[in-house]
Image (cartoon, rainbow, N blue to C red; front, side, top):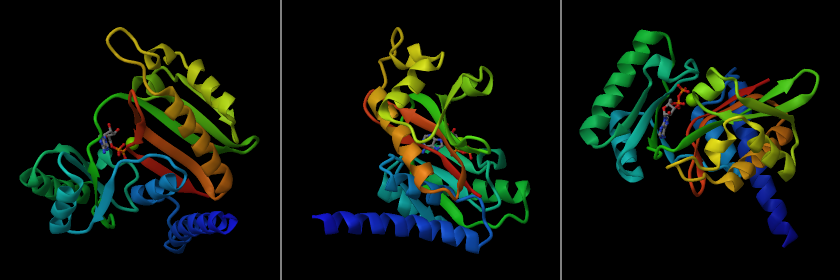
Length: 243
Ligand code: ADP
Ligand code: MG
């Protein structure tokens, strides 16, 4: 049995170090969304289903395989904020919409940065709406890898309602982090909205802590947004910046 466990660990490490090595080789510090999501998956973090497609034809095939509605997102090492570039198209319901979105993204991105190197688009399942949270990590010069948690949108951007812990964290820390943001009552259920899956959220924080501790090359990590449901959750966007 122990051999099997060792094997699994080796595979995991190889997959992640390969992604990191390739980025360094190409002088990239920002991982592509698909690379960041692959690393998340290795740590048991649920992400939206995705396929990297290089042409419009590949995009349509991927959309049919994933199932409508889908999302298309630009994949480019030169574009970090994808929606700012007009590179995100949501809720595409059929082939016609996918074809148009593909053409629009290519046009928008060229206008935004005519020199941007385009690898393709990431075709994703469209996650159902629910409460959005963010999980982040930064390397603090004094304290080292530090985890951040908060609710998405106005809660983080305007109210700065976020909480921090130095990694690694244990289960108790994770539940504390979740319950100490001011918006916590929203997570517990409010009027017509049901409570969300706090246990999955705690697991996400613990797995993210593990991810950043075991991969010290990571300088910044940003899971924004993560959509949390009554049962389970999904990371919709993942960004990883290397040292
Ligand atoms: P960026 O942050 O680089 O602009 P995102 O991947 O976060 O790009 O996409 C922008 C927004 O689109 C997200 O904040 C989210 O609201 C929505 N979105 C992105 N991907 C999905 C998806 N697969 N399902 C549902 N909504 C999505
Ligand atoms: Mg985002």
